[in-house]
Length: 196
Image (tube, rainbow, N blue to C red; front, side, top):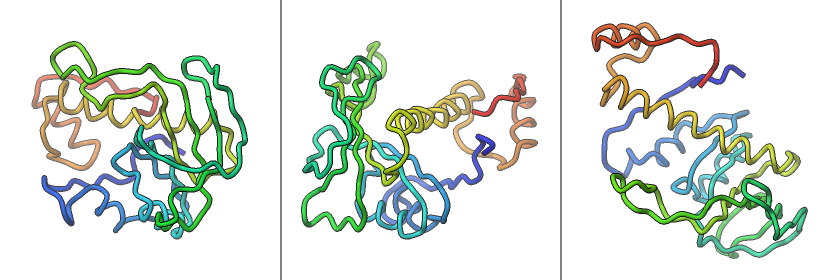
């Protein structure tokens, strides 16, 4: 595992066939781990990932509802960043899920959206519990939590790309193109052996 992206799909604005989830459904490959945020919590997508021989780790919405089938772990007194629960669950009968789903809940800081420029989070409100769904039933809960946390590396990369380099769209799809862009913009990119 190199820690660098092997594929990037750039889509035009809009929905329908260019919606990120629709594009992902068309390019699902076997032997992969797909990590997604709340917008990707679609049961049909989960089924397609599993059918392709891959796995997923995906954040669920705070209002998600399920029935516990098997409780692996529970600690209602969990501290910040600790696992509250690790359960095999069942969603509504009409969900269409074709495989066992594991939900891991982790204590996080609750927050309310205050807007992008008012010193707060510009994301969706959080009740203080991070809910992660996965089909990985034999991986430690702490590892699943770490996998989701590492997802933010890509967010950090795009923030760097947009705000530091000043790019609004890709001009090139290879490392040399990014290096040329940095020279054009008058900024130096420091190369590092650490992966994003």
